[in-house]
Image (cartoon, rainbow, N blue to C red; front, side):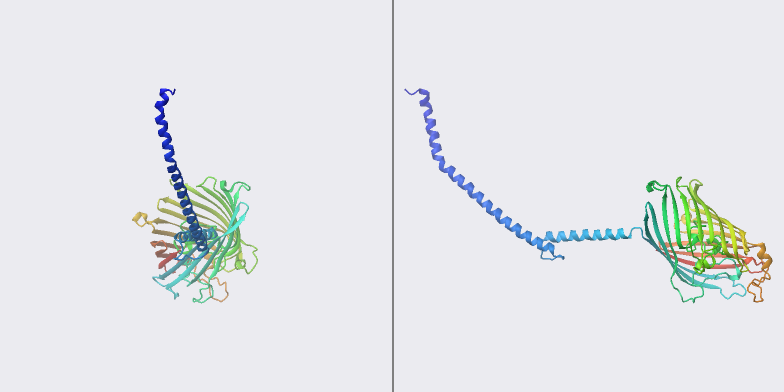
Length: 483
């Protein structure tokens, strides 16, 4: 007998069996549908892969072409544009790298000048001149931790300026430049300077980045005043004072003891020790040996040269304001006395400039001749420059200077009758005495960063120590272009 519970479950079993037997065709149909979908997707993927391969071939072909075409894919054009930009950046970087350490400067100075009263016997009462200067500094390689550079300076010009009217010791115009003996139309370019400098950090073998002392060595054709008798406001005739007595120590420049050639340059060498350990305070000691006489123009040996030794320091006084103080002594083995005799000359000098206020700097130079028969043997020049910030023109400046060139006892005794050229006529013909006294004032007006105009007024009393000569007043206008 079948149990009662089993009979009760029988309908459920029969129903489940019927469901399974009836759903089998549905399951088979679902499986077939899924397989068909998979095949369709595989076909679509295969078609897409073929399209991508074709596009890839076109892309490669397009990228191989050097130019961008309007028919090529957009992504190719963008890639080429990016590649072009990257290449331009690389080229610019290589250009900058190749120019690293190279610097250049160009200056053009024009000067118009005239005398209010022409001295007796003088025909020139006005003059116009120009001068061009181009400087280039190039990397000079390394020697261990030492670095060098090469400096070159080219100069040209026309017009001699007013020179020395009335027999004045100092020229009224230091901006003039013209090849001696040439016609005014000759403006041939001159290689004025070409020298090499090597900077050697100390101590030797140490870390150059931590060095606070170094040695500088220079040799070549140079202007000695680049390295000696410098002054912050009184050594650049293109922007500051133009009277020759205020640009350098008159005993060296006006008096000729520096011994350079007719252009103002000479071959030589310099050795300097610079100590920056207490920076911003600085200390230095320099020795220069330069050709003089015929040696300055490469026409003779460098025997009996011009030798100068200078000690200098930069200090911060007057509440931390900068000042430079220089003391130097020189000896020229082939200098000329006032009568033309070639002999040894020597002397000592000082040059200082000190900022005394935010926009005010004073300067002073003094010189004493210790050996040699010279027309003047003691000099003093002093003055200052005031920045235009005091009157609302920050880039302008006002400069004022005074100078005394004291006639030597030897020249005072000989000047009346001296006939060095033997033509039977005294070379000077007057009894020199006292001092040539000079005053100069200029105003530098900045039009823009490259263009400045400077009206200039000079007054000379007792020119050449001649008490009977008329005083002179010169007016001038300087235009300076700098790049």
